[in-house]
Amino acid sequence: MPMAKIVASQIARVRRARDLSQRALADAAGITRQAVGAIESGRMQPSVGIALSLGRALGMTVEELFEPSDLPAPPARVASATIGGRTVTHALDRDHLVIEPAESAVPSVLIAGCDLAVGLLSRHATARSRDVRVLWLAWTNRAALVALERGEVHAAALHGEVTAQQARRLERFVRFELATTEAGWLVGRGNPLGLHGAADLARKRLRLANRPAGAGARRLLDEQLRREKIDPRRVEGYDRALAGQLDAGRAIAQGYADAAVGVASVARVFDLQFAPLCEERCALFVPRTALRSPEIRAVIDALRSTPYRRDLEALGCYDVTRIGEQAA
Image (cartoon, rainbow, N blue to C red; front, side, top):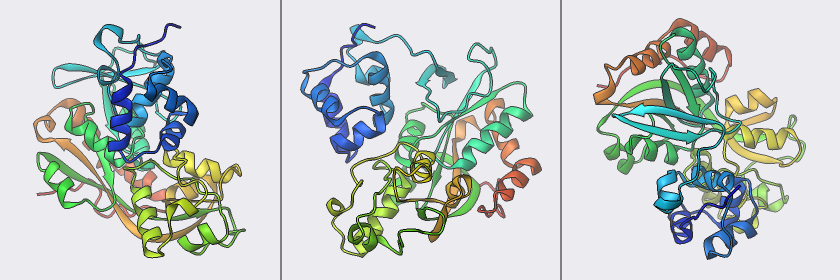
């Protein structure tokens, strides 16, 4: 496969702006730290697949990654949708749910957000309507918000505390309540290594499954480390960021990590021990201008449907009391 001509300085600049180390970016993109260093220095040109993985890890579009004359061909699995009169295309990986074949003529709706409730909503919305297929892009809070602002997704689900700055950025979008869940420590069943707080990560040399900068779990972890006055450099695995919540749970379940910060639903999926730290509200944000579009209506109808509420509640870790409520 021919090499794509990547703008090396752009990769380094955006990585630093995202507060990512070369190791964290490498882990999120599924490549080695040495490869990231070589790409950023211009000593190596990545293949199309690696370049697209880097773009997704950084929340960048293909146009921003490459010089215009060297745009790569799209990968084998992509999600394309029309948003605001233009076509947007995202590479898909194993964590994204494609409900129908890629060649389907049914238009796509793209929803970004890392909570598992978003994936379940995508399934329900697609099952309810023959007119749309809804795809879940399992991105961090930060990446989902950026994509929403840039018109690269139809909607974004954000969880956890919304900062004053984020609230201002979200003023032109309509908020729909999704669910409330708990975030906390994920460890193996029975807590075999005795994790009782952030201090144990360093004291007991536990292997952490971390999330990228911009993820709600990363923010909560950093708060816990600051509270205990723990230098992140003392935590094994802090610089190794896994792209999705499911990745962190899977790493613990398969013995590659000892602990992570995540949500209760991930513990439920992988049969892990869960120790709550706080409640987190998850909400769906959509552009005001799109509220009457049939695609968005299909998503909102699914959000407010009894089957979706019932299935989400059946997971045993979501409070659905206010699900579907629209903020004034």
